Image (cartoon, rainbow, N blue to C red):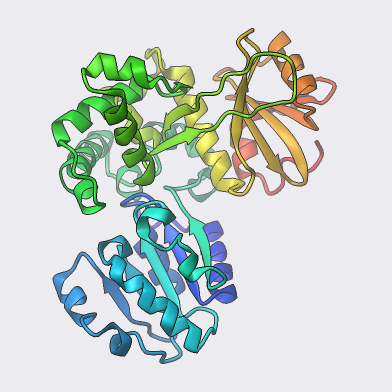
Length: 386
């Protein structure tokens, strides 16, 4: 496969660069940040610095001189490798706050990269990206995207075996090198055990004590491990939503491996047939749809909801001026449940969407509509008529 066009990410980055002096683009390693930056920042020619390259680091030995304003956008890749650079950016920006001075790329959360601090408040805008969106590769390729994940080298591999090997190598390299480069001095063997264990908890409530007992480490160590993977943007902790009701509500977050392709390799899944027979089939589908939805609606304050009485909602999201609920089912014949009606009433949802694996949209009940995942994730405005 050749280069996949990413029009939504291109437009979002163009908009971000046009409105602020500093743009911070974060995403997991190999998500395509550098490729996107070169597609957007290409005319007039701009300076690119890759801080994993010793030569580029040497070029920034005198940053005030190297980063002087020439009217072009300066791109700094893997910025977390040089945190001492950020106070200098503030000084340079304050001398000339023109939009598009710096585009900073980082493979970690904004706080870990170092640009989430107050020093750049009012000077910076944030954008995050993951792997390919379904709208990038086409609705007809939803199963391929689910199986291989959205990281470009995995999705674009010539065959399934090459994709599997690439993801296996990615996991090894990430654990043995990338985590330490992000400042986490954690044993790679233990982190592999932990990440694999976490894959088996994918889509479940986080229980630090249970996992700590399973891998024979302290609860505080387990919390450090999950925070490290979350900051490295490979794990998502989906927070709970608390409604003002008398029912006892679950307070622990749910955990997801953000890229479905990495999840499948951690679970030992290499073929669609293996995936369809795996007990994590439903949870894996749920996680993929949630990640794609959050790419599409990144400012929706996502959360999930569950009571100890059994009522639950996979995703609560604020989108298109509405409070929406999403129940995600790996089925082509979705139906309503008592839990859906309870969630709709208790959370005062404007509408509840049942996301399914089929192709059709149809009403299930008042303010409850079934929509196929392919339509929901690729149509121009799938929530307009809700």
